[in-house]
Image (cartoon, rainbow, N blue to C red; front, top):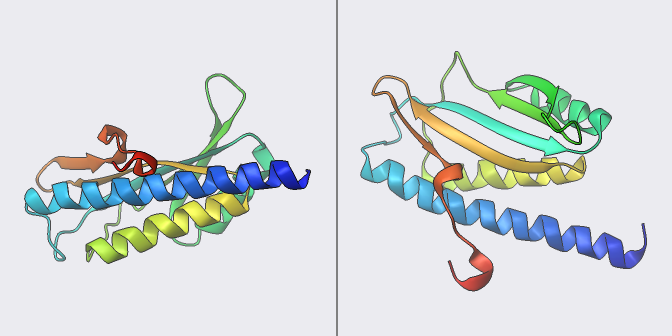
Amino acid sequence: MTEDSQQVWADYYARIRRRRIAETEILHSQMSADGVNDDTVLALDFLHSGPVERDVRSLAEQLSEHYSMTVAPQADGDYWNAVGTTRPEGIDGMNLQRCVDWVTFMCDVASSYGCVFSTWRLADPAREEFWTNETIDVDPEVGG
């Protein structure tokens, strides 16, 4: 990779990271408004994707220390998904800082494998409610 193409990728990953963090702040605000607090036990599901099966599998292997992971090709066959979950276990204490730290880590670890941290969903199974970044449209590059 030339220096210019490396910079393009570095800039791309930095933009994705800023967007995911902005989504996290909005998502956490929605969760708080819906009554989620530090004691609420949530299920966490997430998705990473990448073009190289070996890299996606390596990412999934690293994350499997703390999450249940599966790897499968996307329907178009051009990319691979690493899907993770905390289920059947849950997590609590998902205050804003912990959410931002988790999303930042997921962005950084995905980038280290040439993958992208794509989506996540926090669910409160007891109340049958969920919150996902897929419903948030924010671009911190243009001020939200």
